[in-house]
Image (cartoon, rainbow, N blue to C red; front, side):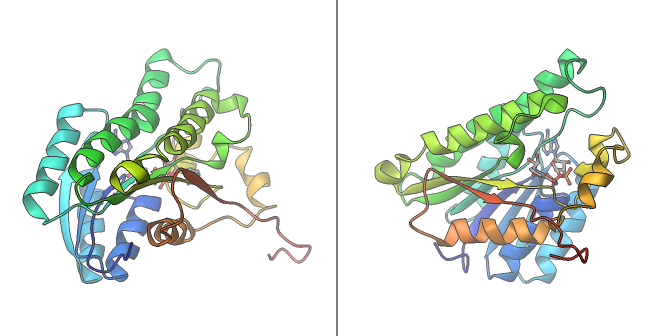
Length: 251
Ligand SMILES: NC(=O)c1ccc[n+]([C@@H]2O[C@H](COP(=O)([O-])OP(=O)(O)OC[C@H]3O[C@@H](n4cnc5c(N)ncnc54)[C@H](O)[C@@H]3O)[C@@H](O)[C@H]2O)c1
């Protein structure tokens, strides 16, 4: 599918990967972008970037764990754009300290609600709106969903489930011409890195970051655009990995 002239929903659009992707879609000629997030001030900053890049920005405060909020987001899309082409289910959180198995039970439930349940329900609503004309749904997973990770086992489990959910949707291509894929970022320079340590970067992160090429949000946005454009991709996951740094400290 061409990004040019398309209409998209991006969740988790107030910062990081969501903001970079919403902006890149606008730069590539998207028509309208519904930017959804729980953080309203971040949303206005993202919408300014979208508008600057030449697309129409529609800010919609949305808690993706709320089914009424998600329904209102899709109702807004139905009202404001002629057809919905792209949905990027990207909002996500980490557990933060203390590490698993001491994660508070409520935090585990909220994490699974945001990272997994909302992705499934938002995809259901997207299919409802796209099924007459087709479309593309991309879900943000993580390399953390491919490798066991005790310190945030709930996060790893939620992201592994997003990969399997996206793979399980492969036949929506045959049924409705809707392509569902997942993107799996490695460590990416976004505000989530502070959230890993509950407000500051955890001690274990720095030595790791010194040995890898840390990704930028735009690297993930490019992968998302690639998944939108590549008609052969459905029911797949694409890994955007951190390459090791070379001996000179460069890639
Ligand atoms: N940055 C990384 O290293 C990395 C690596 C792998 C995967 N990811 C995934 O990428 C996605 C984007 O993360 P990011 O790195 O840009 O982090 P981020 O913290 O910068 O952005 C996440 C956004 O999600 C929003 N959000 C959180 N809870 C929400 C809710 N209930 N409803 C609506 N919005 C909500 C936040 O307000 C924030 O704007 C997440 O799913 C994350 O798990 C990030």
